[in-house]
Length: 127
Image (cartoon, rainbow, N blue to C red; front, side, top):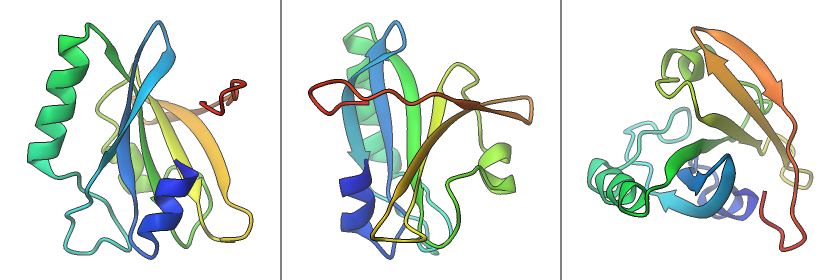
């Protein structure tokens, strides 16, 4: 996710994390098609449909939704909270406010309430 965010800079990067039982099995990079891609993200609808079809065909869940903040901390903005439509998903934010030291944090957002989650990395670098 950090690599994707760095590659898309100064645009915001976005994607979906698919998996089962809360474990990420695959990261899906999506194209940000928002007309103001520096301040917001909006995933390409065709790509999003393809990704969600693939996740459901594998009998997985949307475990997480990620995007980058290019000039602000890794904390959900009011827009992020308003657009948190999947209460069972984690919302992962990558801040590139300091590009030399990216910050990755994850949250649950349920009915406007933000709760930070612990992020664990596996030995293969996932997570």
